[in-house]
Image (cartoon, rainbow, N blue to C red; front, side, top):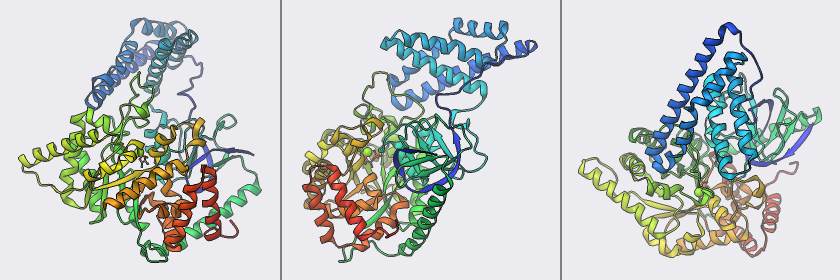
Length: 580
Ligand code: PEP
Ligand code: MG
């Protein structure tokens, strides 16, 4: 039995069989072919090259149209490599004279090149090594006729163990077959983590050396409550966890009775609980859990996993679907928040050394007007079908906010000219998730109808800690007093100005933090659908005075761990079952 401590990014406990996703691309054994099949195999290699070249061209076109020519240039190097006649000759010679399989010939040739480049320890050449590895991967995938995410076989429900999962890979996991997952790297605030929560499966990231001693088929426990992965558990451990799973199920069952009751504190203060979603299908789950609407719809997930940017109709259908399912309840659709770790099928530009500080989110939208306008048109067209509100992400400056609103006004004019009906009075809000927006919050407020404090990015930017980096994961703490002060400043200012304010991000999903958020002044929380009943239970069990006391004590602390100690002790005193 081996226990590994990672970072829990989606709660729940699961016991199951391990399925391992290959660590670095595809491993190809040294295998030979029947000499009589040489011509056939060479042809197979040439076909794979052609498919690869077509893919590169398609990806480049899609990237240029979505992100601009600058990003498309990344693929020029790939194109040149895939078309390089010297490389093809060398690989074909290995097939024709050594009778290696095309897969092995590709790996051997390209693997050697990339190793040689790396050994030269020159930054620019190392970048070329990445390009070569990328081409190697693509060629192998086309030769084998499968994608990385399809390499593991889920014939029955199992637990996925991987070195890392990209956000698109996580978004494409089959919910009925993947019981849970754990990765070796990754941080708490990453979007892969957020997707795991959306899928509603227990998940752990940053668990370290997971794959070293595991080949697939072993029993694994994912303890999403404590962030622990247990490989090959002994019988006693399995029994203990089995009991915890049963107790958790009973508890969840008891909470279903809260579904139709309001999230109202003991002293009669009404709290509104909304769901945070990434995919339209989550609306049902949100309503089932008693959600009062959608407080954050991360629309960028429409782009992830798609080969090309979604067109206006695709956007429109998604928004209409969400509004129909909500039957009059509100939804706050955030315009796409792409970039940083959320790139649809493409790598960030080569010179993007700090993607979180780079061309992402609203900045990317303002730089790519046609793409932005397509989404805004669809949102406005859908706005007549329900209570749709619109929110801009990652607003750093007033200038950006004003530019975004100008684009919106332009799009409205176009629609009016086209006689398309939409809600001209649609509410327009902004995410407050960069410290600069908090500093100038009183100047931002008159220009928006509402704000939503984004606790994830606010933590990332206030503490200068990459939310996706395992090395600094312990420093990523939204309960840090500095972050809490910023939240407090934002909500106080919004209340003073009479502007509705909510909070979203992962701090909201842990019921242990609910008293703190209520005490800071928030009355609208956007939480993951699965967490709604747990958060509601806390709201109904406390008074505002008690919450304010918690928040005041937390704000007065110097360190995040002291804040956590307060929250833990309140939780144990009030909500923790005695035998847990
Ligand atoms: C946030 O930053 O808190 C947030 C809710 O947005 P995202 O996690 O999508 O960046
Ligand atoms: Mg954010």
